[in-house]
Length: 300
Ligand code: OGA
Ligand code: NI
Image (cartoon, rainbow, N blue to C red; front, side, top):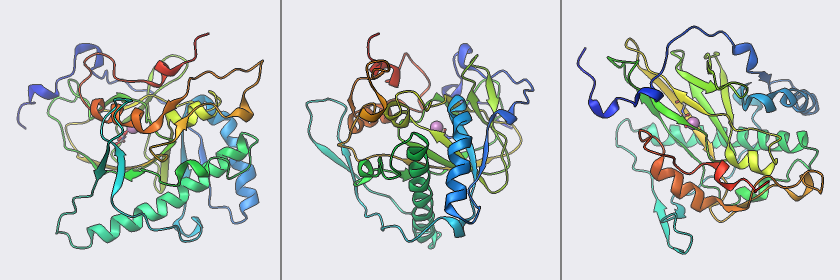
């Protein structure tokens, strides 16, 4: 195998240290396939109490149980052209579909339609778990800017020097990740920052809590830092679906969850501007801080 391009070599402090950690029992597995919705809802609401410590969970979901037909998402998607708060210009995001394979476009669209239904189901269950009406958060997704991405991680000649994706927290509400059986995703444990491998479970999605959910819930839900390590033997594929609110939504802790004893832990921020800023800096090798949700922490 060839040499590694120096552009991929991480600073020493970000290089992965390979050691065996078996801690996947810390990541709850939630079965959404139980037939009656009320059972599903009860078990999820209960299980998510523990999930709040972990910031990530797996969801076992058969397609048949995902619900009724969702609206077709229209291309194009509009997002802010820049992260400058005074710049009101919007930019059009359009998919560049390759001609081959010819079924790709239809297949991807069907995948995102189905996974979007799951996202709304999860959103509603999370709202219930917070003691809120099931549809409390739905309005923020009227012109959602959600998208799916295909990640391909080729075998790497020097896995100890590089990362597939550098450490980050997902910015949106939720991420629904489908991964193959290779493995490589790791989350930073909340208590001590230790990197815990997220082992692939057949037919289960990985659900990441994103920054917006953390802020809406005023820290009842927590968005876990994660990264991807690579290996020298096998390529890996993953498909994250990023469930993102409409760009014009301002994100702040929900009024119902704050009071004098429990004040808002975050200042309000505009989701589209936050996304525009993150989008430019994510996936680069880290050179200083990029914008993080902690920058919006209310002062104590
Ligand atoms: C991401 C991400 C994880 C993976 O794309 O934000 O965290 O396993 N991907 O590919
Ligand atoms: Ni991510």
